[in-house]
Image 1 (cartoon, rainbow, N blue to C red):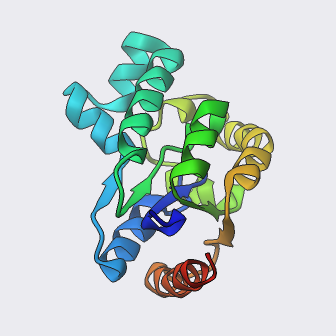
Image 2: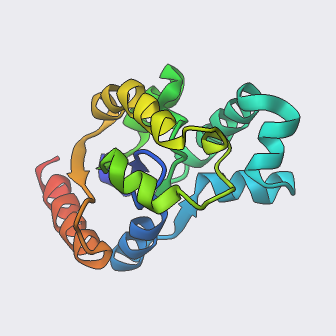
Amino acid sequence: MSKTDNIFLIGPMGAGKSTIGRLLAAELRLPFIDSDREIEERCGADIPWIFDMEGEQGFRDRESAMLEELAKSRGQVLATGGGAIERPENRRLLVSHGFVIYLHTSVDRQYDRTARDRKRPLLQTDDPRGKLEQLMAHRDPLYRETADLVVSTDGRNARSLAHDLVARIRSAKNTS
């Protein structure tokens, strides 16, 4: 199995992981999986409800279990939740089971994309921009440590970015 058989997208909320992931999967003719949607589907509840009932720790436990299951499949594009890289075991799992792409975006762009979204539990605060800044300061080094490739999504068309990623993935496959 080649490291590029699985493509894992990591990055903060609002970076475009789901949008770009669907386009990338279509170009690569692979199934697309969104780990957050898988958690919701299997739990029969949305993520805000899981946060309300089980707290962030409970959600992270579910997320880790889901990643462990999904990462062991092969031939897929998987978009992870923004906090999936919080746990060292998740980072190790992603690195060992696929090609990890960090979709980086600025806090300003994140804020623009998420400001009206009530389904993001960590942003249900009086200062969502401040929370985004805090999360980025903490998580950016973790994303970078985990990624095989770092790409900025700011000012990029999702379709052209997906097309560029396909070329870079194929190049990585040819050199591995």
